[in-house]
Length: 261
Image (tube, rainbow, N blue to C red; front, top):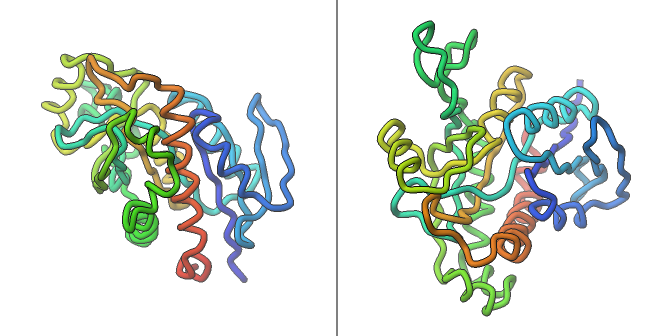
């Protein structure tokens, strides 16, 4: 039997994926469960792109439709996150090596952070997807590609000059981090976590249960404390969306991505 790739791409906000929707050739759309799914091809690869909404429930529901209704063979989630690791600043990129739900707590029946019935705390991204995404992210950040894609005055507004790329753990939960107490507590409890968001680990669990691969790529939009970008909407539209679109373009240009099984 010939394996045919069908890629699902998700973002929690429309601004995070509208540039990716524009990449689709032969685009058509379908609404299911209050979500609009845009399907077509990117570089000849069948792809469905969707705005999921915020939170683990919304992400799980959307990922399930991608798998069961559209038959995707893997999912890429892209969007913004708050920095937990002290070395991360606005404009940096984190690629999720492992995903964990920081608000899962069924003690004393099972250990904190462990997913009931699965006996897992972390969901791991496979090495091939990590290699592909790493190459794409580095292509964006080297040789001034970023500066040539985003206007200098926008980069200056958010103090982005030489953004970093980190590979590591990402924590997800239905909580927006906005003060130092929350941030420091999470860092103490899960010191390996680089950033926090609200969807990635839910998507990872859904993919794990359906035995398909996943990739979670996050752009740091804030430091998950008392400070934040001057204009979050502007950052999402003018910076994070451009990051996501360019990374996806690099992924799809990679010959390895077009030939692996």
